[in-house]
Amino acid sequence: MSQNFVRKAILRGHEVEALAAYRGYTLKPLVELLRMRYRPARWDFGMRHLERDLPGPVHDELRELMFVGESVDLAPRHAKAVEWGDRLLTSAAAERPRVGPDPGDHA
Image (cartoon, rainbow, N blue to C red; front, top):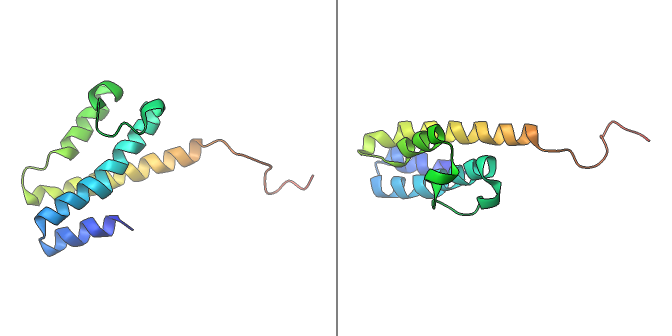
């Protein structure tokens, strides 16, 4: 839902709003997901120490998404970040340990 704020601001040409929304609604949650995957004990450290806490290639990819040179660069970076976040969420859901009995069990 919140990605709609970013998309609408981009489509309306509200560059400052779009960049602020991208940072708050896209990059911040993406960093939290990356931290949960690669450094769970520091999932809430925000943007601090990312160069130490993430593997080099992951940090490099994130860095590319962080730095938006021109307003025309925002939409493709946003799309990549959303796709990456979706992959991380799907992976986390698949790896999540099950709690409780299987719904099909009638013991």
